[in-house]
Length: 424
Image (tube, rainbow, N blue to C red; front, side, top):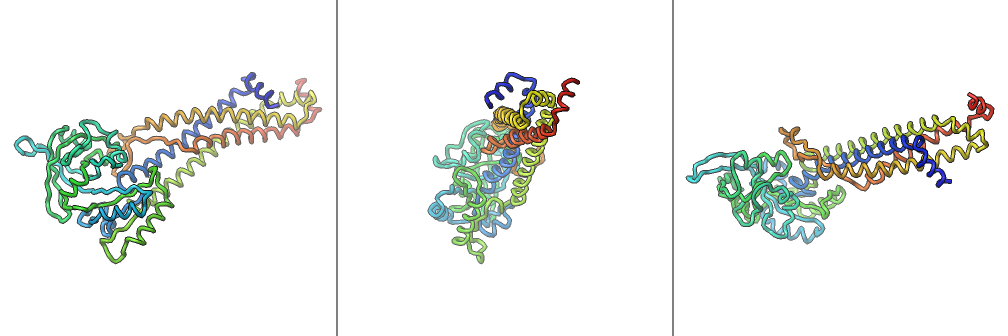
């Protein structure tokens, strides 16, 4: 029976082509919208985690209270021993040291006379260790625009826009002017080994990246660090796992009576991200639910209208002696076949479009010229496991439901009226 119905769908395009196109379009839009919302919302969290907060972050209690000001006079010391203990107690987390600092980049000529200057946002990470995961995490190598990666101490990277504004090219010497952990002025010359484009407006405006050991020397922070960031294996933030990790660490290492005691905060507890995460989660669920319901109504109506327009065919089949239940069941089986075909086509097309958006993204840098939040300049879709089956909700269920409701009218048809319709 199903084979017979499938042949009818394939051969009679006037009856099946429009419903399949409607289902395919609805499912495609559902898949693309779901992937886009997940990607945009996920990128906002991911960028903050990689550049600022980590999945969890360890600081001194006093540093945590004013971390936006980068108060390195309140930074941690003895971090090498602490990281050794962390790797022993929490081996499933990647622990990295970072120093954030502000300063001024001075560009001298051959006589040492200043040519140009610019305020810089400094970030010190492990650039020289072969085992470092920071280069990949911060996407430094892929973001290189000119020059090369640092190979030795005393080399630094500048953001490409910053270097262009200062008229600095790879190989030039610049002077970093900043303050040490103890408040005194510090200056050090760096060779610009290359320039980087991060794709983040805040970083691209004026970032300087140096090796962690160079920063410790310049800032008088030997065996010190502003922050220790932890990242879960796989790079995916897990709210429940982060909460358990935070509670275990603070119970063992943190002392509420000591302002220099280390304290761990999870991602949602930093930079007012708790409200953002809640908003992102609720908004994405609401948007996806609304879109799925809207497409379900559209496809439901399409099935309903398709069933009503076939009342002449239904009447003829009943006049020829086919039972009402048989006609109804065959229509439902036909809508199942159309729903499956349309959902498959729509899901495939939607995944292709989502993959393109995931690979290339949409550049919104022109809209973020005055942005101060840590947001990517290119938003991308993200294909999640849900994208493979979410389209079947409106594509299959709604189509079948619309046909089933339209078929209720079959049982209201009277045989005596059928001949009058045929004669007309």
